[in-house]
Image (tube, rainbow, N blue to C red):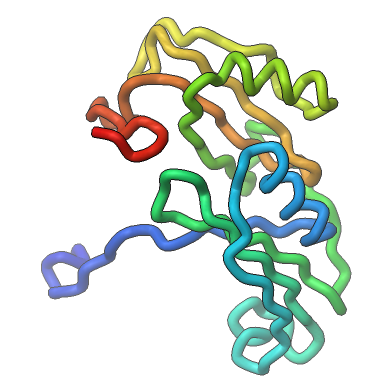
Amino acid sequence: MSPASTGVRVGACDHFGIQVRDVERSARFYEEKLGFERVERWTMSQEYVQKVVGYHPDVTLEIVLLAIPDSDVFLEILEYTGVDGKPVDSDTGNPGTAHFCLFVDGLEELYERLVGEGVKFVSELQTPTAGPNEGGKLVYMIDPDGIRVELVDAPVRSDGTPRRPAGGAQ
């Protein structure tokens, strides 16, 4: 039975979270490299938080919430303290890993700047020859914890609908 047939409705995305080794290092990376803006900073160790994340009673979460430019979705960066964290093999094809995608106007310029600053990428800038990004530019950037961030400069969204340009102009 689908949620719609029961009256349940799943709505829009509020945020997505990434687990990192050092919350402040990662927050600075996204702020300085991609222009994200810090919205909030929390330290949380309440019992309900520990139970939700599955580490009751040992964990404390260090959290930074960042606003993604020209988006209603936030990036939540979490550092788990008080528990053993082991880095995962974040290679792109491994099950359980993830990436998120950001539109970038002026991707070639951003790419060149980030390469010059030592940011790692999976490949050099690519020009898609098929799919919704055909004729645009894209690349996977690797953040300090190995998380893949797809950067795309293309006129349409994944479903083929026109995307809103940076700055929100229509």
